[in-house]
Image 1 (cartoon, rainbow, N blue to C red):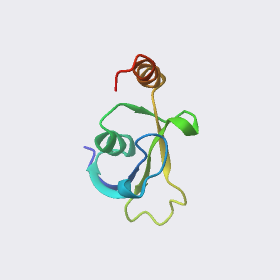
Image 2 (spheres, one colour):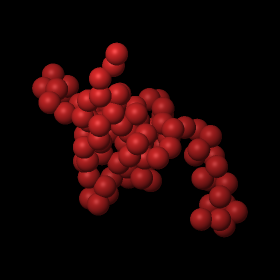
Image 3 (cartoon, one colour):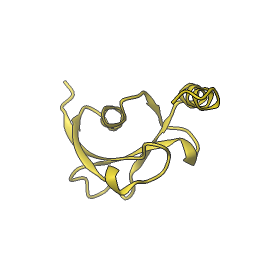
Image 4 (tube, rainbow, N blue to C red):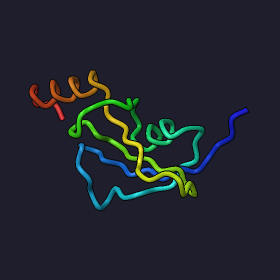
Length: 89
């Protein structure tokens, strides 16, 4: 049985850091689940900097030297781009 942990998640809503979306604590089974809870969309571990949506740290893990990045899926990026090009916001 997997137990829930507390993660610190930094939300990057548009691929850019914003002071308003600083680190928040989230209880989840995995880093990915914590990131998806904050972002509200499915995320992937691979992507480009412009697709960055969240960075995650395990609370209390002193061995973790850097946050794990999570990126928007390519199909989500294409949908957003189409909406912007069509004037839908």
